[in-house]
Length: 213
Image (cartoon, rainbow, N blue to C red; front, top):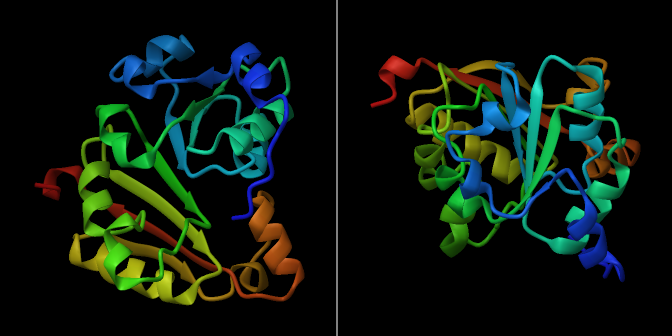
């Protein structure tokens, strides 16, 4: 990802009611923050927010949380959020600490166009690595439910193997997501790559909570 500096990023972040600077503060308390018991969906690596904001607008009875580690990207996302939106918050943080931010509160996780970390020595940094799948286990409220989209075939193949080895069921899979079906909500990268004719790889996986240990 090429990062462009946002001159007013500190001001934007400081003044946004949607920003959570430290996700650990609300661990176990997210429903209280939202002031309802609606399901909570989490996007890890939300980028500039196109997908998550559109999802939140279209689904007012679902709460959405996005996490992104780069200040300039967070600022761009915050600028796009409608001021009257009540079901979305953004965490400025690193996904490595995700298991300290939520505790059996999440219903669904989205991994959209995550960094593929192509070098073998960086494999555990991939958001579908055994390390991260282990972290996610403590996040889910009930059964595990996760979606992945990527343009990187190597990451996709790696992810399918990790999901299977961790006991996930591959519920839905596509090797050309935009060709197979209508896709109403897309990320910035997804829009760009699909317009270029690149295949988008997609999978939905589930796992029974009772079999997670």
